[in-house]
Length: 149
Image 1 (cartoon, one colour):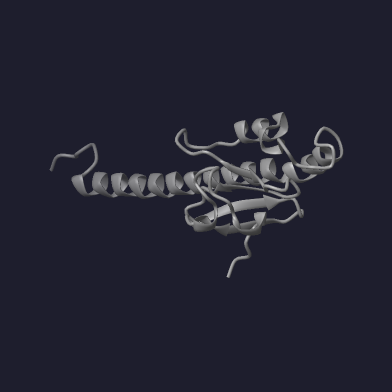
Image 2 (cartoon, rainbow, N blue to C red):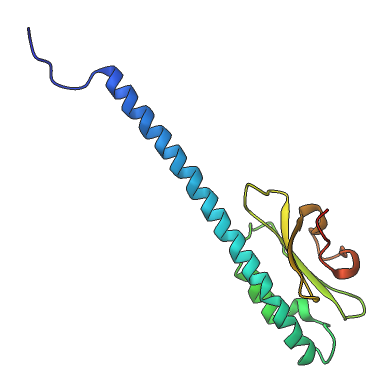
């Protein structure tokens, strides 16, 4: 009887199957945490707008939010966010210049229909994506983050 050296086909199939399963698990876990970090980045950058809005109101805005959404703080905040190239963050000031609201779509696959919203009242919350307009021509109701039903 001759001694054989090497692996059998069954052993190779089992090893390859284990490698595929582990690789898939690691890939999806990594993607989940990358998307969560993108969401945290968006939430942090939008949250900065609340105190910045108050400073703007008392300073350059001269007791109004006129021009706030076009200010360097807002534009820099939006530039720091990991957004798809075709997506534009939403920021709008009311016609009376006494309120503003901003929102951006989130990435986490667990909540694909969510956006993060901040407004001049200091509210920070997740909202339904349908409540976050895709263009600056649309007004959000009352220029406030709508509550989740």
